[in-house]
Amino acid sequence: MGLIIKATKEKTIQYKNLSGKVEELTSVYARVEWAARENGTKVEAAFPYIFVSKEAFKLGASMIQTDIPTSANGDVVIQDNPTVHELCKVELEKLGYEVEIDL
Image 1 (tube, helix red, strand yellow):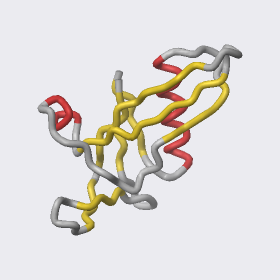
Image 2: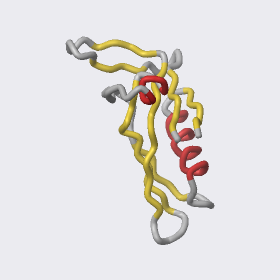
Image 3: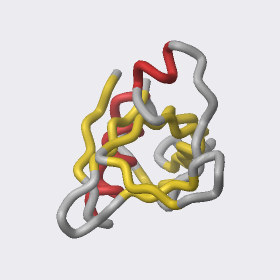
Image 4: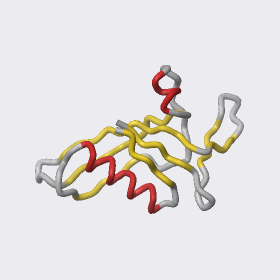
């Protein structure tokens, strides 16, 4: 369960490499965690676990720090994985990123 977040002409993805140099990436892979609140509609989502790619995640690579915001909160009709991922996608797209849901 994750998001493939892609840079666009309007929005770049920047991170600091191990030597401290700022670099740009064309896309990253983010894992999503979330909590459902007791009212049945409120969810709080976070995606602080960002990797260079899904393949890097699968191989056990270290996470990277980027300039991408790492949370999304809102009211939803159903509190489930696909709905929360869609909420995160919409919030990131509002910021100018292109996002693909990877369930």
